[in-house]
Amino acid sequence: MTGSPRGRRLGVDVGKVRVGVAVSDPDGILATPLVTVPRDLTTDADAVPADIAEIARLVTDNEAVGVVVGLPVRLTGAEGPAAIDARAWADTLARAVAVPVVLSDERMSTVVATRRLAERGVRGRKQRAVVDQAAAVEILQSWLNAQRRQ
Image 1 (cartoon, rainbow, N blue to C red):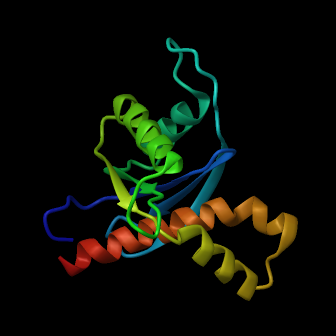
Image 2: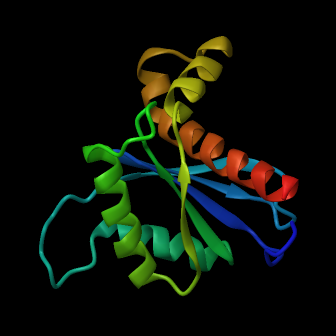
């Protein structure tokens, strides 16, 4: 990956209820699902939200060299409330970790992830449990592929 240091990266899909997380191999070729973290919507300005703290721990535990956060822009390219929320979440994460946090266009990642899970026969409650991780895989894999093309 030209211009990027070798090492694992985390991919993150920030939702209203859950945060899906994926991890890459050290060579930046393949993204795999890692975990789903409950979203912490508490607004105590003095405390680090539990979801941010957990992602920071995952960065350390996986020796990640960067985090790719999905930016849910609209199909038109405009940013709505979900994108504003993802930007704010990424800014908070960036203050909590010592690695770069980048935003990556994630248009359709959840749709693609849901379709792929359905094709594998994963539906309903089982799908809801893993769709956030699958979306994080889509976000990270797209970013990794783009880095290799550069």
